[in-house]
Figure 1 (cartoon, one colour):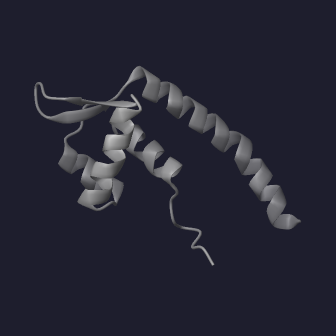
Figure 2: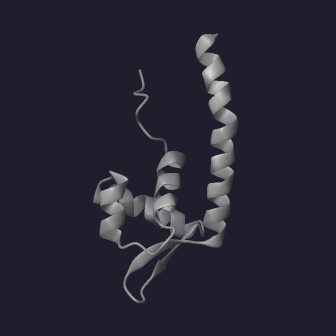
Length: 93
């Protein structure tokens, strides 16, 4: 049986993007994400390759959400609003 508290990939990507509205250093993202360094690097690489986040080197090495990343977050938030009522109804069935 799957643990209900586990996050899926979409939740993790969404959480990472949410924390990168302003430039964040890798360490700050690591502490906030509750992921191992290896896992975090994997997900950050995914976000950068998809164009949802960008890696900056000035004024310091950091990651920041892109315009496409903000659009993606908007879609995720809509999905959550639609899915929550459906999930609540299915609990009673």
